[in-house]
Image (cartoon, rainbow, N blue to C red; front, side, top):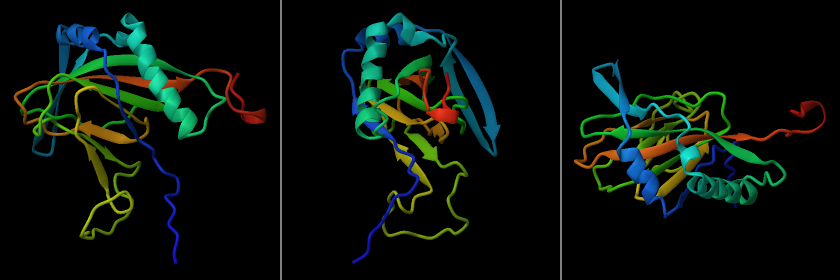
Length: 203
């Protein structure tokens, strides 16, 4: 009988948080600026709010998100002795026919994204790839794709879905083909000082 180990995993957490109606009302009335970029023959167009401290205006919701991260980091990652904080936060809006460009969130530990508003089967997923895009140079056809053999991983948003993922993961908003705009609030998470131990300690 054989054993299998998912070594050095990039762990993504998915949960649900309700009671964010006032945040949604605020986001839909934000001014968004558009970033256009052509990659190959594909036009990527994503909209981001100018406000990069958005959650500071809704501290009760900010702490709800942080509470979910604490549950994740304490019970899954087992970092029970390290405290964390949410730093930057902003809103995104994706309209029909648009998609995002691959990117990562440098200078951060984990990132989060929260979805609200109406979603359907045509709502753009969030698409992840690894540090080097593909873990191998070989391209095989699999009868079933899973965490052991996939080069990419997609999660389709649902209303009130909250996702945490390592900030180093390359990700993007997939192609949005829904008539309903896709709204989200994204944010970054960093450890509070002090953390680490002995000669690796950050004071």
